[in-house]
Amino acid sequence: MKVISIDIFDLTPELGNRGIAPICIRINTDAGLCGFGEVGLGYGNAHFAGTGIVRDLGRRVLGRDPMDIEAIWEDLFRNTFWGMAGGTVINAGMSAIDIALWDIKGKALGVPVYQLLGGTCNEKLRTYASQIQFGWGPVKQYLNAPADYAQATQDAIAQGFTAVKVDPLGVTDQGEWVRSTEDGSWRLRGHLPSKVLDLACARVEAMRQAGGHTLDIIIENHAFTDTNTAIQLARALEDFQIYYMEEPVHPLNSRSMREIRDNVNIPLAAGERIFTRWGYRPFLEDRSLQVIQPDFCLVGGITEGKKVADLANLYDCMVQGHCCGGPISTAAAMQIETAIPNFAIHELHSGALKAHIRGLCKYDHMPEDGYYRVPEAPGIGQELSEEAMSKADHYLVC
Ligand code: MG
Image (cartoon, rainbow, N blue to C red):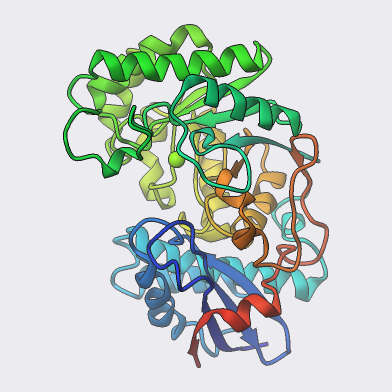
């Protein structure tokens, strides 16, 4: 079997760098089998690089046997000059190719990918409702009042979720996303103004009261805070029994992370902007993170994601895949999370509830009563719909 071409789909080109706009690929073979992958750049401001990197790396995969996944990963890592340097764009491209190759292998062998990763460790995947500050439903909002955070929490609980995640600092007291404010009144570095800290605590307190003590609350900082303000916030929130705190500081500075860990009684998590074993090594060796959050469409695909998860297990570190993309991303995460013993919890981002995301693929996999079950179809168990592919901006590597 040989790879003969790669299709690249910019699935919602009208969104570009705004919102969640997934970029997916399809690797085609001379045997008629194809596999799907996702480039983890469907948000943030690297959208067009996401299609470009697959055009660059994809040429090295043409003519290869798609079953030789490890050898192809090593080739992209060692022989492209930039592969060993890592970075977001390179790893996103490598990840998409790797996931698509695993999809092909599973289909060729007639088994779901998790069976090739060791089989079932987790029959169902406890799932949390992620990014409550955007509301919990089909329309994105920017919640401001604590009562609105309580209502969104109750909306998630009503669907069966027993865990939620919120960024209590992300929406200003003017109801705007923090990055859009320029007057300095909502500062999140240096020292938190009292009004910021008070409103953040009031939002979390409202969620705790809405959910009671059986609800697990994850705090998301989006690395908006620095070492000082992260410690300040964490100490103020310790009484609310926080499950863990995500990206409290710059995601590549393990010393800052360790300083926060030494000063607060909340476990720390990060990983959506950390790639490969080489990136995770310092955080694991210094025990600054208790939960890692690799995005399998960024960390180096299923091949590298499984190795990172196994490495984390050595350090008693749990794994929560970062899911903030399209349904292919979710499918890849579920395959690994099913197969690893140190699985923590699965992320369902509020963006994944939106119609333009749910409509991209053949199957609308959603959790039931707060749990996902991995699809049993061969491969990753998900494919783009013909309609989505026909509407996409399309590039071909052949
Ligand atoms: Mg995050």
